[in-house]
Image (tube, rainbow, N blue to C red; front, side):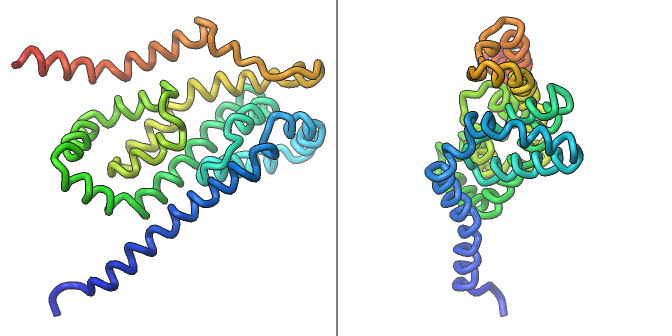
Length: 244
């Protein structure tokens, strides 16, 4: 018998919504219930226990840290900044930055896959049905690499949104993963370096100093990378103008 069962398709479509809806619910609950638990003060209060556990179980501590960080990102829970600082505090700039990049990138890929599996096909059909949205999607598709790199290098778009938007626009996982893992490296190194200096901050009872982010030696290289990522966009715009 030709054709499929429409009711079965509807049931599968509704079932696919359960995962992203569940993640959204967990994210809202986490923002309400875990905001204070996943904070700098919590890290400060448990620093000695964390350092002792790391010293006794280094590999296990590293794996548990990365798994926890990945879950935070995958469920869009609060505390990603504190997690990055923790990576620097426990493991130093290196391998702390490596652990942070692997964990954050893996969590981003997980939520990307969940969103694409649950919402991607349905939203893609809607985007293609409208002329304006179809042109917008085609424009992004033609510039996937530079656009995704810019989203990571310049934190104008919130991290969770930068994980969801590509999924809803049917960006291939390979492109998303490469631009995510590589694009978050500069910011991860900076925040990890701040975390690596938390020992002295804790000793004086102070707070993390993020003024490092405003220093030319930090933001100029990141700005340079952003300009390099944007070069293909400028090139296409100039070629389109010259060929008119």
